[in-house]
Length: 418
Image (cartoon, rainbow, N blue to C red; front, side, top):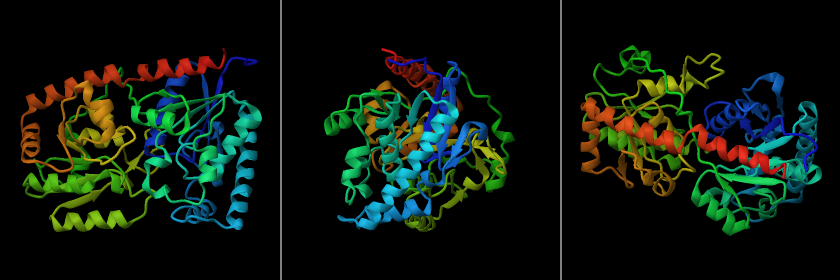
């Protein structure tokens, strides 16, 4: 039994900043919680959240030098040194102390670890959160986006003991949330943990404010010719995004000056794939235009000139040929901004999205002549395009709106009162 109603919610992650999928989903949950009169606070190694509600701890960031050293010694090998084990414990203890400080400073009633108990980007942080929960019995909703067993790079490791302990942990006061049905089944099968599915969502009840595409300054900045389509790949440059397929699609369209605009940077998986697609684009005579330096998040643009919404509004076509996704933020964003989308039928799309009846251009690993023909029609036939995008918006409003997440999230919070 709780001694008082839950009021103050503490989000904990490695990073709560920028336009990565986890940070975007945190912002959505915050909006849902705050409109239900909860107050939200933030703990991470990188933050773009209000300072008065935040605790920045550098060791929580997955790219902090000490954490990188630990990760390098843990993955791709079968044994670890006692020095690394000691270092893990040292950093874990520091992070746990900071968690105690965070909860005390902001009088936190409910903890929401965001992917920090899911994917081992920061092992000491996962261990610290797990120990903290066991020591305090604090109500916790663990929000899982992608598990370590879903990523090949984590399968060979020298830290299975840590993974079993904290990624994710099992505790009576933890409610586990996953974002798709396949993850739900795997979590139950592998670890025996019951869970709730809350898909990624957008606020479809609040329609986007459109600006006319002719007013899009980005077209001039990226150097598109008049009349040429703005084809957007709204993802990071990482192997599972299969950007080669997007390059091929642009090539098949036979444009005068073929170009693919990519909104995000290479991210946390190295530069090898970046070099790969640059060379692949050059081979196909496609110009890759990277605009991540122009884009900030919605609330904290700082020196950035545009938000991701500005980019979507300029787009004529979205390419999303991913081989794997935990859910598909970019898919929902394309639907929200009423843009046609080309999507590879990755597993989660097949199981959780496609059955809803969306009208999109689909491919299965490669673009067929049929898919290219439909893309050309979408780009040329305005009436057909508007009918398609309006249908998709209404479907997403029904299945992936804030109200869907709100109902399930509030129910989970209320279970702590039982």
